[in-house]
Figure 1: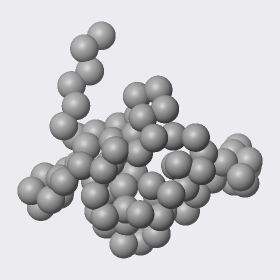
Figure 2: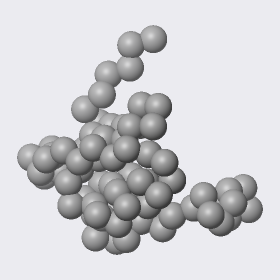
Figure 3: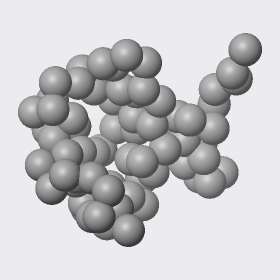
Length: 76
């Protein structure tokens, strides 16, 4: 489904080891992306796409089953 809606050069398959570190549970603010440490391939791809990744040590939150996005509160 994703392939039919998103151009190939805009897609990235997160490596399983980085997926287990919740690389996709990131927070994006404009061109800045906060994500857990230990996701070098994801960070490299984000940089190549013009984003500025900010790795943060979130190991204690990962143990509980959450990551960066789970630590946000939307104030609308």
